[in-house]
Image 1 (cartoon, rainbow, N blue to C red):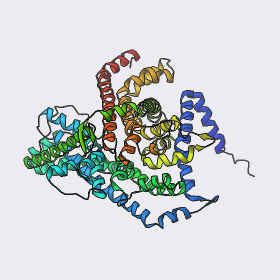
Image 2: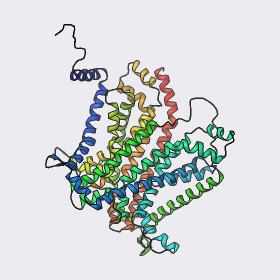
Image 3: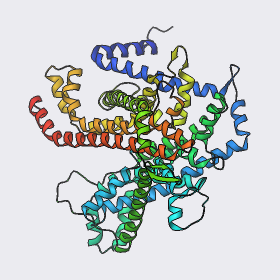
Length: 579
């Protein structure tokens, strides 16, 4: 061997060990946090997903597509897959259109502020309600002996099936599109409107060449969000779809609860998993490639947005007011239905249903609140740590960690519930029937919004603040708690608000995980609906909506309070650190 040949690179294993040793020495807090994060992700995200895939593709210890082939050989399952895609496309198109019209009404009209506030408040109602609340009210309004049908003198309608499910899901999910598109329309530069008008463009041309093109990223994002939400919806098709309109989530549920076929349910969940992941990845790619910048750092007077063309404003107003009135009517039906003895048979006023809720349903109320509070606290803490580590620290595998932490958010709730049954129904990690499995299902599915909020908030905080604290001798842990956390409190509270609302109202994942020891308000509502106890279901829904509304109002007040204090806190931190 020639003497001038030297080995320039150490073995990969030694390099990896050196990197770990360097990380432990330079930032032991980061190393400990990464170990804890990856361990939690391995147990509550990767393990259930691996068990789901194994149940689908492993037959007698070998890789096989026999289970999937058996599922696809049944025309009913293929029809359910087709129905899921058709329903998701219809809901995403209609919901995005309605959400855009509502967003235009709020941001591009000269309506009185009280009217705009009322419209915004009405759109919040479906968000703080169980996902199948509209199913209850629509059944009472348009189903057999429906109140609205009687009032209009119409006969029986073929409400169940695609049309009822589509209407219900559209009313449930269009507020998501409204929130996304309102944010996009609000952050545009109003000077672009002035420039278009000053160049001689009409309001119609300005709307078509300025407002709509700049809205396209938000419109595309809203379509994808609603597509995923509809694809994952379980309760609405179960109530309104029936046997005439099967979809994959309900088929997977019936396969497990009715036929006790975990392998069949796993296979159906895998079919649901494929389009859900494709939509999620496409959404991430689309958002990453689009530019949302319409406001630069240049100073100057900000003009007001130009109003919509008169005819379009009338159309927007007519649609938004009609839909708002219909939503209020549906919630009035639920309220009224909770105070009558027997729906459409004996409409005598009574409080018996609420007495039943607070007596026989007291355990469901306390269990729901307890699980939601614990999940919110744990999920928020985990979201802060993960968001901070991803945004502020540099280490190998940072992007992989970000994607992995969001994986359960991309999966339909039915898939998560079935995967958790497969993973935690036997030793060594036996969690079935415990509070832990419910909390884990909520935390690792809904903390994603908190992570994104923390990351977005940290992008607006000057890292010089933390660098100044570190240079003055503070440890990274002390800097995190004394400098970083106070600056991102509004983002943390926003994530907590989202997490708590979904913990109170979710059903698709937890329907598989509840037990006699732990029951939830959403499952009690679903039980009442399936037993045709509409008045009891309405009473449970009203109690749940009031509880969520009170908690949401409290967290919203805390968000506004922390936002007002944010500027003062930042100035104080600048003074204290000398930055």
